[in-house]
Length: 374
Picture 1: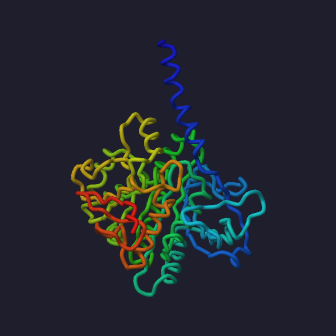
Picture 2 (picture 1 turned 180 degrees about the vertical axis):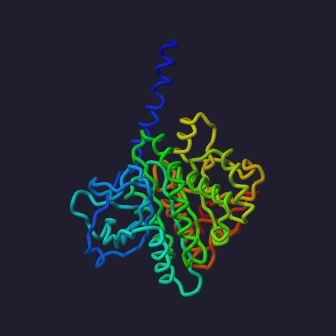
Picture 3 (picture 1 turned 135 degrees about the vertical axis):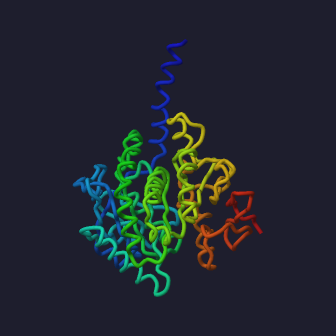
């Protein structure tokens, strides 16, 4: 009997991995199609990455770690038949430009100063007054193609015309390499700080810092280091920090956040009790909860942090781990706020605001719930 119990315990990580593999997204690839400019809507994303270049077909940057960050500009085509909340990769070598995400063009940028100049160009194109920008940091088990296309999908679906920067760290994009991904995220703190400094040096007047899953731990590490060493101009320009489904310890967050709050940096944590990926992460780490699965803002020890609870919203992904980007209700909700001149991450507002979702104020948390049928 004891032997059976020990064997079962050894099998748990294997069963967890199998569950993740069964539900995980396809690896995806970068497909270059210059004529896509005539078919789809072109979204420009500036890339900073701690990944090493690769000759692996369809990836451009792979899972290897680069000694110094690499920079580039990508023009990505969003297909005319795009379904909000989804990213469609070509099947085989013949992409369908009406349904598939493809890259129309790409350009290497030589250094961080070139990245700053590129941000300036994009910022001035998007607005003559305020010149907002945003950066997105992907999560665990994500290839370069997946992270890049996900950012494009987010800014297109949520009608963002801001200067757009994607930070891509060297995830192995395979579920069995959780520890490799975690070490890659730690490895990338310096490269992310270089990227954030380039953003601060640009003409962007304000920026949103958005991260998902394991990428939230990377972002918080970088911000905490920067908070210890000055960077006054950088912190003055931050509009908001958004941590989506954060795969990081609650105690770690409670230790790091006060230094940012002292800099008057608004922080929002997007959580869900139905996030299966975070449940598995907690099991693998021998913990009860991750930050993205807390049940109340009270668990944050009184920190002045906004909590957006998506528990009651249906997810467009099988693990419920990326509701912000895959739920049609959340996408419509954010778009409607934007169109009315409001932002979900600029304050805690209560009530229905003309969309399929509503904000319900509950103590220190804000819950997003489906809008009742009329």
